[in-house]
Image (cartoon, rainbow, N blue to C red; front, side, top):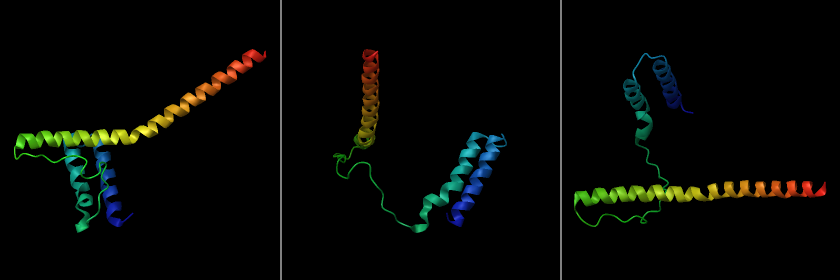
Length: 118
């Protein structure tokens, strides 16, 4: 952790304590927190590559120059990105369900075997 990050963490802890103890309002807390975190988002002129959730080109750009249509297409693009992120999470969910169902089936088989044995 850099010295700059450590200083920001100290400022955030002090801000959190002030809000938790009721010395500042929620709105004031949010405004100060935004100001404290601003240097992190500036990046100091460093350009980094972003990892996109949706591959570029999978969502079409608006075709007309109409601002309302562009707004609707932006909403559609946001919905498409949200759906893509949900779909990407699906295999993890399916594996968990499969694991639980497999464990339940094993328990049923073992219980049946124990009942028939006695």
